[in-house]
Length: 208
Image 1: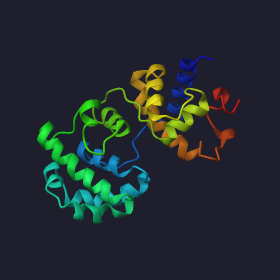
Image 2: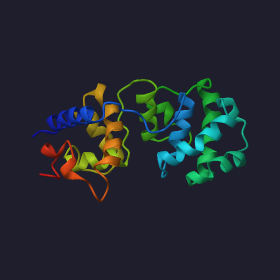
Image 3: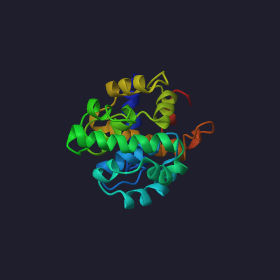
Image 4: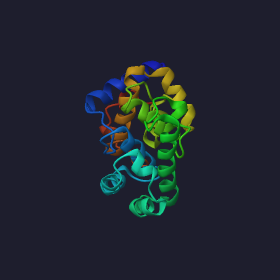
């Protein structure tokens, strides 16, 4: 079976299993989403969702964050881990958005990744969820599941992204990534996958 054929089967199976392909991070606008995504690095989305209500209540606009004392932001995001780096990045990314992008969250990968603390994973999430453009968010669930299925044979996030861009239908790629996160938490759990319950077992390279 060719990778493209296997990818289409995976897209169809996960779409049926998880019709609502939603991002796990709670955010009401692009600014909140990019900040929540920065906080989610090496931290669970559930933990981030506990932290962000107070953060977004205190700082409502990009100007609020840009003017914030980094130490004050640190206190609010402390439980997310690496809180000093994350707080600094959040304040500095907002300052750069004001100075370089008119206070808006950029709408392309190059500009997004020029922001402090924003890598391709975050940039792709913004591209897909905010701007509705084809995107591949190469998080740990997507990387693991894509390797097990036989869609990729690398754990390098950039290589995974580029390969999946080749074989996934562009209009399905962003939702496929969200569904892989849901599937990775529910069924294809790291180290203890429930293979017998998996909707993709018939064409999964690892299972077969």
